[in-house]
Length: 373
Image 1 (spheres, rainbow, N blue to C red):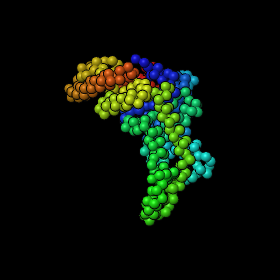
Image 2: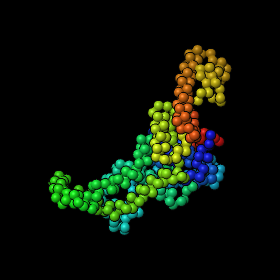
Image 3: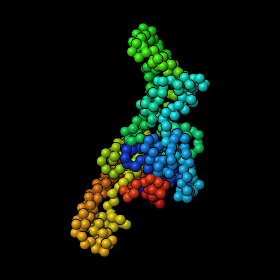
Image 4: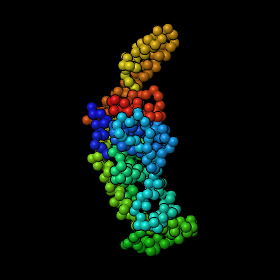
């Protein structure tokens, strides 16, 4: 089986996708730390508002600008660097408006518009699209050897794949065309029926809303070409040979089903699946390779205490070991099924760890399972 280092060899971008609650943010950080330790300049981006990435990297906060992580000797085996940031979709959208505006006056017309301020953070797909925008920006600047993105949960990750197309559809939508360049039937509507509609809206909402809408659409007119071109390039970046996806999942239930579904969707879209990471796997064997199940648990307890003695304690140990063994068998069955569906795709297993990962040491320990060292 290929190692994760081999999977990422020659890649400029790694997108980690999967359902919520499977350790995707932590896995992204561990991968970034591991690749930095191997001499690369790496930036990891998250959309996670819970600040788990910042906490695990020992940073007080993250924002829309990459920050250098002082990982010390634990990540400095090579000459690499680790950087991290948390995406601010609104700030990224503002930067995009600035990029495609003809001048400062045109930029301010959009940024100061009440309608823009409302939709820039709420437009369907904007969060996912702006994540790709930020990746595209960093990729184009060429400052980093490897970019790693921690995406939203998998249902949103599927939205993430379609985000460039949905944003393009919005900016080329019927409402936009009607306000900007009405022709034919649209012109007749704008000339007669649309005037009736706007007069009603004025009475209901006041004239400010209509003025803001008109100003918004007029201000956006000059940006359509730039947005369309940028969306196409962002979408192309997903299919670039230097981009790979990692599906991160848990070993049971809905996460494993969503991992299989996401794998199929990536294949359908012609996107490269570099590997699958299965977190929190219950091992079939006990600590240090000892036999699993009740027999192994009693043997370990006996060695530790110089004999079991307490019958009630022994019964509870047996019951707990039996439950864990059942979970381990279930995990193994699900993993084998997932591996068979993704034949030829490297699969990396991370056992259930006793401690919650919240610092560099924990990320380093997780990385040993991902990188095999």
